[in-house]
Length: 146
Image (cartoon, rainbow, N blue to C red; front, side, top):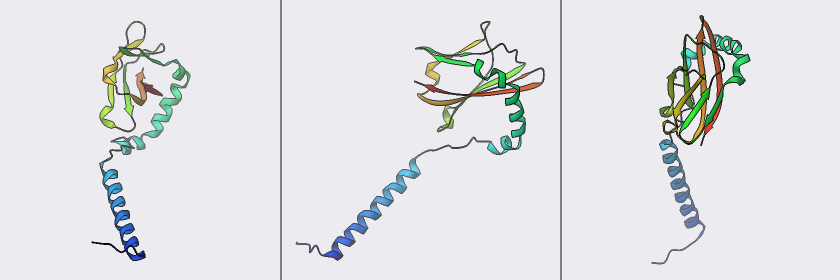
């Protein structure tokens, strides 16, 4: 069997290959899991002015939060705060299955220790939110876990 390679045959072959390429791209794009927003973004959007006020309350404390890592632990150092209630959220932008919410319970050195095995390598946004004497505070810091 001998195929004649005239312009019609070449054009048909090109169209078939191009359509196959497009189908492969569509399939691969549907298999990719991307989470761009938080699950409950609408209620959080309504209360955004409260979050702005809480950020302004904690503006002088923002640089006091230190995050370090060693072979065994991730260490979060807090400034001198006395929270009535509070949480730390380790927010992973691209995969909400890796998000963690932990209550703030510092030791006497104002530090908290987290096992490194709880985190996968990548960039996290760490959100500190606490209340002191019914006044809210909020700080965000980016951190890259190796």
